[in-house]
Each structure stands twice: as C-alpha cells, then as structure tokens.
Image (cartoon, rainbow over all chains, first blue to last red):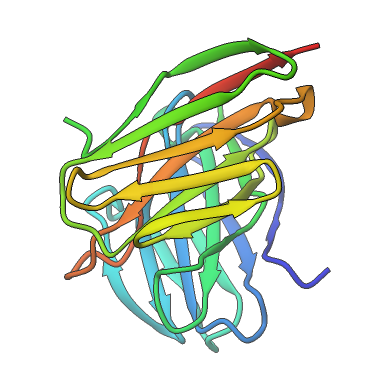
Length: 113
Length: 110
C-alpha cells in the first residue's frame, strides 16, 4: 500500500496522559499536513511541514501539542497532558510541492476518558 | 461564521435519484476540493477544481468562481454512495492548509 498511513488507528487514554501519533506520507511527497476533526464537524487545519521544516501552525495548536518531521519523511504529533476536549479524529495528509492534491490517511481516533 | 458553507447538512434519498450537494465560500480561492469520508474516518479526494467542471464516473463537480459556489452531483445514486461529502478550499496566501465545510451526510436507501 503506497498511500498515507497513520498509526495507531484508535487510541484511548486517560486525561493527563501523553499520546503520540505517527503519520507516514506517500514517499515522494514533501508536504505533510495535520488536521483535527471533532464529531459532526469538518476537519480543521493544525500544522504543516515542507520536508522537515514546520512552516505554519494554527492557533488551535496549543503549547500542549508538538509536531515533528525529523528527516522529512514520517511525522509525529504529540499531545501532552491530554484533556477530554482533545478527543477527536487526527488526520494526516500529504502532497507534492503544494497544498493542492492532498492525499489523506485513515486518521487516528483519540478518546480521552 | 464558517468560511465554507455546505447544504444540505443531511440528505436521504432513494436509490437512483440525482443528488446535488452545494458549497459556498466567502474567500477568494485558488482551488476547491470535494472529499468523501466513509464511516471510520477515511477521506478520499474526489475532485480538485479551480474552474469549470469535472466528471468521474457518476460524479460531476462544477465551480463558479465569480459566484463563489460549487456543486457536487451524483447521478443514478446507489447505497454505496452513502457517506459524508466535504467541500474544502485552499485560499493561498499565508494559510497553507485547507479550510473545510462541515460536510453533508448522504444516505441512499435501496
């Protein structure tokens, strides 16, 4: 499968714990995007990388959130001290050379209890 | 106010019906996406438009840049078309991510 993959697909955690998600983009894609989708809403942009550089962060990305793409390939999104409001689907997408033509991964569904 | 508005929010139709989902946006854009989201979250890109009309199988997408409006049509709808259809726009400038509508939940009954 050469599409965008995300791991894990589901994560249940207790409030206050840290969680980390991984996204593996399509191999030749240099742009990688993270989005968050809460129940009944469309996705919301969180941040994006061009290669290893994080070029933009949404105001939604509080200081408890950090994203990395250390070698310009896979990316991780970490949430520290999780809160119930962090419960959502976290989507990753990748594209080649620009924001058009993004391919989405299956998402990681986070439930904070 | 969301910059991307979709209508209807929910649509139930009988198999075979012609389906139209509308998307209006308030900002200038350089591209508009129509996406399909299946239960469980997976998103598939259906179309990316910057002008005119595109057709793929039973799906047709149109965009009117002057009116800031796009439509997604499904001909001869089938129960497997049941999904959430999301409109997303890329407006360029400093914001490189997509801005999404809330989605239209479509159910096609046999």
